[in-house]
Image (tube, rainbow, N blue to C red; front, side):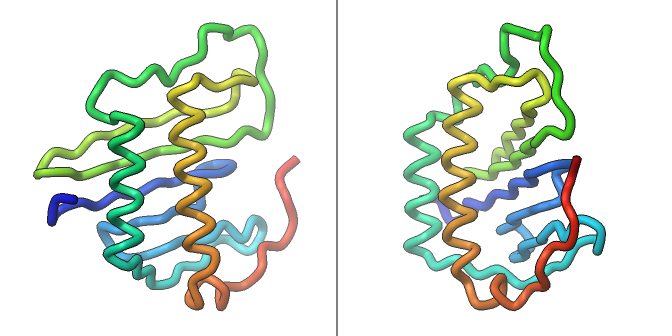
Length: 137
């Protein structure tokens, strides 16, 4: 894993949740109560595991993130916005579920984000954040 490896991923409805290792923060969408932020510290082992999983996805290739079918639309919909820094190069990826389906590449990124979010949700700083109130219709 390169020394400068860092990433951020914003996700969820309106992309208000964020895991950001550039700044060492996690932001939780509280829906009607706004957002709350806490310090995020991932261990070297956790970051190395995430980096290895990104390499498995092969983020250096051109990812297909736009679905072929575009005749369906749903609201609300989830979205994801990634920034990944490796060896001084920053790659950005974005996609959403508005068109009712996602590509295989987007699914791999979503699965990785879910894995990362599970790690973050177990951190004491995240557990101390307030509960969300309300929901998205």
